[in-house]
Length: 609
Ligand code: AGP
Image: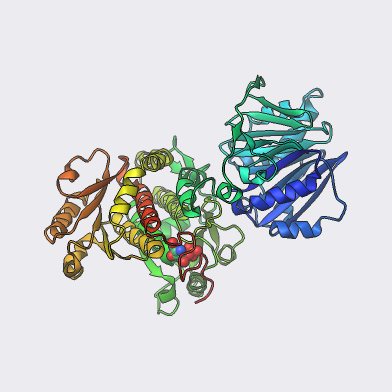
């Protein structure tokens, strides 16, 4: 996730772009840049926040047409050369999204003599546009953008300047947001409305495959065939703060709703459905190394640890490798039995958790190969591990991890399927079944979000209780831990996640009519066993809330409430169930009037022991 902006008008474009970028910093803040078209393209860019960019812009730098960018690194570290705008001779581009086939395009462009100065996917867009306009003398910038949209695959919102056409900006989008602002003193383009709300409330949302040309004379919209189209103008009612959260009351709720996109972005370009295989070039281990692997040790904390527990089941089931899951703060002071054949995997959203970093360093001292799953390009863990697999969830502001958790699960599925295929444990047909299922997840998550009212009602009904239990078996056991953790951290209700079969070994003594039990009872090989556990707690007067599949009509007989997830492959239900539990925690905390985005005593990134 990054933020792009563009401005054409009578105001000083530098000031407008800087103030607009500041409003988009929630989308990314590891580097920033601006290009103003004053006859030539004048570009300033730097690593860091917008305030760092302001420091390097010389006094008196002005203009009336320009583009800007605030970056959340996906391809290439946060370095000045990887910051946007990216240039190709007389063309400047800012981009939000991921060009999935950029390596293929980059190789072709290099053969044609183009030199690349960055590691980004975006730079191919600049060179492709330059090549297209050079190859055909009468090709306008608008036509060139339309043309390259047939070559690039992936997601994008782009804004482009070209010195040959100095009075306008051309924009286009596919699967990344883009909105145009119509003001008295000019026209604005941005990834999100907060960017221009202080200038205008009149906005036009750009749809997929549409193009826009903004000039001092006005705004023109085009469809993919190059024909002019009319668009509706919306009046934005939100204030600036509400707009930053896209109208959601909290960042957490916004981030829960971003999961269809973050899941899709995380698997984008990595699934070959036809061949039934995963493309995981980031995992720097060849087939022999994967075949000879003896053991995987996953190291993490908190929610990332819960994702690691799911990973253990996946690696053992799909890849046939013995897998341990370790709590980083314990592992670092333990006496682990490790050797060169053990592969250690750190899972950390921030990439900065002190215990996880220390534990992974300790594992490497035994000669283990180490990989990491993280959401932050350039974070410390990326320098401490041999392979880095990124979740593409974009910045997560709410302290409670939501979209990064489901993105971690996606990476774990991809890894397990990849390793399982290489080791001959999975046939391409079995792999294909799961991969097809993964591609259905964004739509299925959206369905849960569309029906969230039932979850809200349930949360409100139980909002005053003091204790909650969450139970599940197999893959649903870590999801019960995650459901309990989410509820604890934001609603301050005491909650326990338990392996359903373990209840009778002690905690059953705590079950009463005052302790609602959330039973994750999705279809799978432990379903009947979970039904037995539900009966056990019902017999002790507990009210039971089941998380169950849509087609399961039997469950209603045994429980008080059912929260539904779409039918899916048994192994994939953790993604869907966790969205339900995130919403349950969110609406419970809301009903209790808690500080949802910044819960007491907690920090987003725990960089101390
Ligand atoms: C989850 O909601 C928490 N905020 C917390 O448990 C978090 O997952 C943990 O601190 C680990 O953080 P990391 O993923 O950045 O390493």
